[in-house]
Image 1 (cartoon, rainbow, N blue to C red):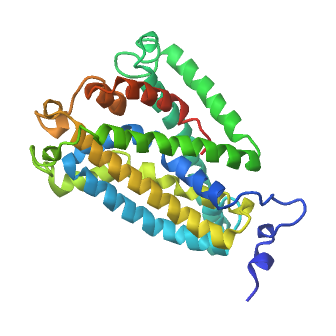
Image 2 (spheres, rainbow, N blue to C red):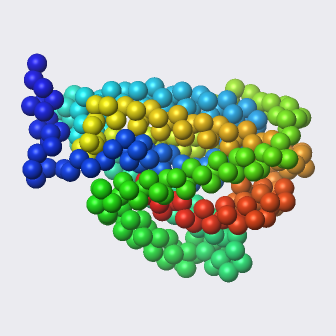
Image 3 (cartoon, rainbow, N blue to C red):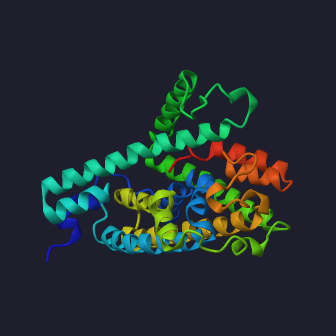
Amino acid sequence: MASVDQVLPEAANKPGGLRRDVGLIGLMWASVGSIIGSGWLYGAKNAVMVAGPAATISWVIGAIAIVLLALVHAELGGMFPVAGGTARYPHYAFGGLAGMSFGWFSWLQAATVAPIEVEAMIGYAGHWDFAKGYLHAKDSTLTTSGLIVAIVLMAVFVAVNFLGVKVLAHTNSAATWWKIAVPLATIFIVAVGNFHPGNFTSETFAPFGAKGVLSAISTSGIIFALLGFEQAIQLAGESRNPRRDLPRATLGSVAIGATIYVLLQVVFIAALPHSAFAHGWGKLNFPGIDGPWAGLATLVGLGWLSVVLYLDAVVSPPAPA
C-alpha cells in the first residue's frame, strides 16, 4: 500500500508547501477558541427556555453526538494531514463532485459563523445607553447604523483571520486563554453564594419532557456551539506532528468545551432567583435577559462581573478561531 506521503504529497513538509509551524497547543486552542465563542453567552438561557433544567441532559447528549463525529475526524486527520480536511476527505473517498459539494457546505458553514459572532457582539453592546436604539430597532433588527457597525466588525474579522498561520496560532493561544478564563471565572464566582439546588425541581426538572430535551439540542445552539472542534482538522496541513497531535487536539477540544458548557448550564439554572422562572421556564424573564449572563450577574449583586462580561462579549467573538 502506498504511504500517505506518496498518496498526498502536500502532507509532506516540502519546500514551497505549507509551513508546519503549529503544535498541539496551537491546534487544540484553534478548536477550543471556536467552540467557546458567542455560544456560551446565550446557550444556557436559550436551552433552559426550551427544556427547563433538563437542558443539562441536552448538553450531555449533544456532546456525545459531537464526540462520535470528532472520533472520525481525529482518525482521518492523523491519516491524511492535509489543509481543509473537512472538504478533502469526501474528495478522496467519493471523487470530485462529492469533494466540491462538501467544500461548498464547509464554506457556507464558515461564512455564517462570523455574522453570528458579530450579532452576538452587537446584542451585548446594546446594554450601553449610547447603543440603545442606535444599533437595534424595536423589532430587534439592525438599524442602518447597526448595519454599518456590523460591516466594520466583519472587516475586522477578515483582517484578524488574514494573519499568517504561525502568527495566528500564537495569537489564538493568548486569546483562547482569555476565552476560557472568563466563563470558568464566571462559573465559580456566580456559584459561590448563589447556588440554589431547589431550582432544578421547584418547577419540575423536565417541564417539556423528552421533546424539550431533544429540541434544545438543535434549536438552542448546542450543536452549533460544540461544532468548532474541526478547526484543528482544517489546519492539519500546518501541523508539526499530525499523527500524534491532531487526534489529541480534536478530542481534547471537545472535552474542554463540553465540560465548560455543562457547568455553565448548571450554574445558570441554580443561580436564578425563583421570580425569574415563576411563570414557567418557557417564560423566563429578568432584567438584562438580552445579555443573559451579564444580566444575571447584575441580578445577584455582581455588578463588576457584569462589566467584565459585557467587555468579553465584545472582545471574545472577534478573537482568532
